[in-house]
Length: 323
Ligand code: DGY
Image (cartoon, rainbow, N blue to C red; front, side, top):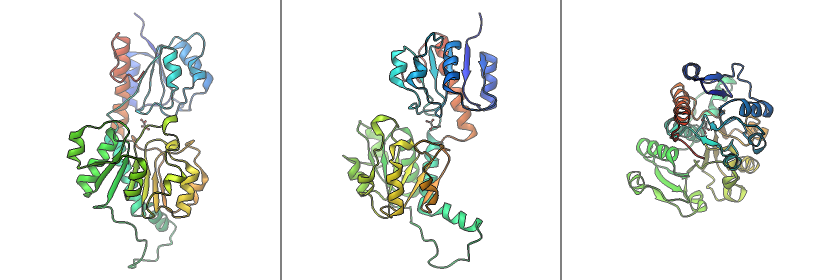
């Protein structure tokens, strides 16, 4: 029997590309240049599975292409707001993602950005590199103490809980969270966490606010000008979820006018073309979407995709099916 044909849209770690080669008739993307809409359409017409990632926009136009052969879209990434899920459902396509394996590394990056923002790490690094540092003094570059402060989490899924654990156990932080759905009571008890009834309540009470909700239409600009104004002038906003959850223009204004003290961002609206306003600011730490970027995690993400398509081609339910 011939091997199923799969198309991978970007380079993956060599270990998982090797497994793909041995198991499938695979089209890899050695140039790592993002595929065009036409190339993605052709992949759906000629392959049994499309293996995109979070930076590929899999739109309704692409999914509605005539003469599709593909039956499954196995996303390399836990977030799948890059895929038009309604169109995929209407087209009868199975969609999977890669949960669990990137939880800790993404929570680490959130904690890293929290510390960078609180302690002015990017600003300090620039000062040293630019040879502008004139020496230690009692009032030089004072940041904010983290230990014992209050962390407010927007969303309380796996990554938020992992961050809460690090912040509570490692830094003695008090944990607040806001999530519209129910959360496991044993985790709330374990973290001694307090549920806020509204985003507004959380924003008013937290010293650090970290965003961990999914992206997409339902959460677009959840953090807007009005809500940023509720934060404390000493507070910091951390985003490792999706860029469009925060209104960039409003955040730039909040940082310029010091409605809040700082921000740490790993994700951006329209990334990688970020609003140039961020580049002018000293009180924002910027990272290029590094949440899951460790060797171990990226290999594990690839393996998760391999499990999902293996189950699908064996006629069983993929473990990480989202549609
Ligand atoms: C994801 O998987 O959704 C991250 O944003 C990239 O690892």
